[in-house]
Each structure stands twice: as structure tokens, then as C-alpha cells.
Image (cartoon, rainbow, N blue to C red; front, top):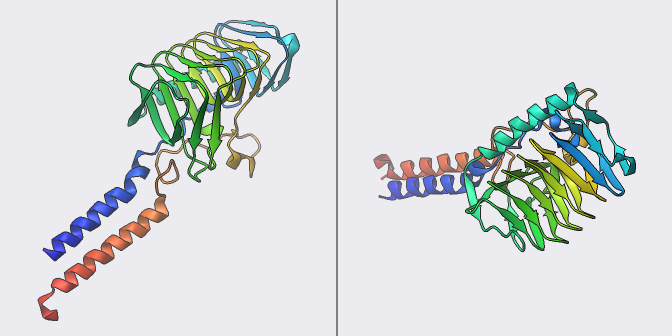
Length: 285
């Protein structure tokens, strides 16, 4: 009985301690869309002085208006091969984000919540933000946050997304089944992957990307800064993407344990089982 009890406790501890790592999410790969801060299909429209750090792309349409008052730190790609490649990568990324499991169900209103890494969705298919949302990386710079809205994403005026404990905007993804609207003076973080359109109202800022798969991106006196993972700034390689390659495992993702810890747990489990067997050895009596 002592042997069975020890083995049972060991198995429980192994499952308990490794569970969070198994549920962690890998990064959503953006492919050739990585260099873009703004990407749309039907049109890109701007009003007022807007600053964009990152490339701007449009495909298949060509209507880019109001960019006389845009300060662009990047390249404008309109109805060309680069824009088409980025759009194809966006489709892949959108479908990837949509298929992530398991998903944790959260309430529609994200304001006032403090969330750790993982994939989240709402029962009614909409996401709203009024006030502040905090995303906690728990000391892991590779922690990935994926939010899914089957229909819309809307923020109220002055809303904020705050990242703490090494969470990074490059690892935050908002998959929106229709359109996203950022309210006046909202400070938003993460990559918005919208099936239809994205509207940033007056004074809204975004650290991430505004990527609209089938519709338009509408801007009004905004600041958009393409999110780059801090780790990719350490040793850049010429001619390579600035985004680290997607990870398929859970060794370094989310709030769980990494592979080194798993090895330690496995060793402890083996040691505990060995001691239990030795105690049951009749030759020791």
C-alpha cells in the first residue's frame, strides 16, 4: 500500500506540475506579414497627423488616401507581390489563431481583468474593453496570449492594455471574426487579425499590428508601432525576419514549467519510486 501510495502521489505531482506547460500556446507565425504595421484588402484611409512605424500594405485594391499627413517609418506596398505575399501570410495566421485549443472562456468585458498566457474566447463571440486589461507574462518573455472574437472587438474611449512581468506585445494576438474598433484615445497592444475591417478612432494608439484580411483599415490621428519581440533585437541576422520562428512545443511558452524543470520533476519521481521499491524489498527485513 505504501508503494502504491508513493507511486500515486508521484504521478499526481508530475501531472500537476507539468499541466500548465502542456496548455501553453506557441506564437502565431505572421510570415511575410511580420514587417507590416498596417495591412488591408479594400482600402486604407487616414485623417489627421498619423505616425506609422512598420510597412503599410494593400492588396488587391489600390485606394490609399490621406497619407499626405502620415509620417511613415517603413515601406508602402500597394497591389504588388510583397503585399500579396503578406496577405497570404495573414490568412494563414488568422486560421492558425482560430484553431488554437484549449480555449478558456472569459466574460465579454475584459476591463478590470488580469490574465496570464493562454487562448481565450467569449461565449457570445464578442470582445469589449472598458478601462484597463492587464496581461501578465509571469516572468516569461515568450508568453503567448490569443484572444478570439467570433464577431467584433470594441474598446471604449481611454481604454488600455497593459503588459507586465515580461509580457510582450509581439506575442499578443486578437483574432476578430468581423471588425475591430479602437475607441478614442485607446492605448492598445497586440496584433489585430480581423476578417473584415479595423477602425482606429481619434487619438488611439497601437503597439502591434492592424491587419485586415478582407476589408479596410481606417485611421484618424493615430500612432501605430509594429511590435518586435525583444529577443529578436539582440542578434539580428541580415536578410532574415525580425520575428523569432514559431514554437510548436511548450518548453518555453506561457506560465508553465520549462524543459529543464520537467527533467527535474522526472528525476524526483524516479527517485521516489526507487526508494519506495527498496523499502518493500523483503531482503532488507
